[in-house]
Length: 195
Image 1 (spheres, rainbow, N blue to C red):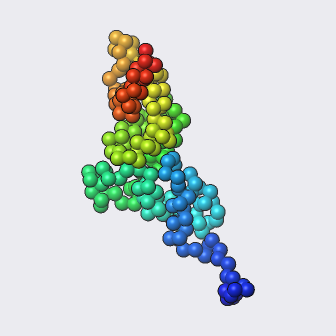
Image 2: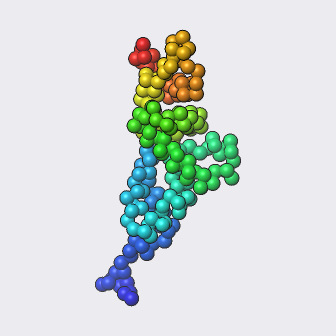
Image 3: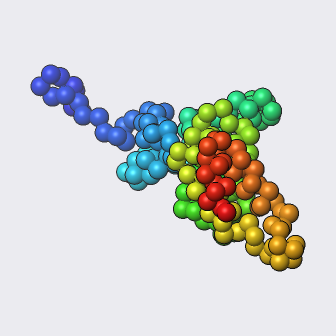
């Protein structure tokens, strides 16, 4: 065994680090604040040791921390209580939200997940303090998504309702999100664009 001396410094390999240290490094790979924690993926793929320390299945505490960094938790904590917001629950919610944000960003308005994405957006907007709205508006571009939905889907099957949009969850959520995700000046612009 090589002893560390000034002439022979001991080299520390990544695999020598504890899981806690690797998780701490992975947390910083999840930055920046906006967007999905995609920076963790290359770090996970370094080797099996790193993957087993920071993989989604193995480190719910890490992904719970990432959720708290990227999304608002105060409103759900008040509503559900801290005991309901365990790391495993937050980790699963992080996965669900990141998948939805990516679909919203890609403007997937006609896929099988569109209604659940609208419901999640609604929930994020009513529970937002700062972070949720920033993720939706600044990263996922919810405004373009909801405008695309309204242009392309609001009047689907309206002939069954004498030309009026059908009263369904998707249409109601899209209108609600339009109202809450835009400021007053943007409302006027949107209404003008839709005419």
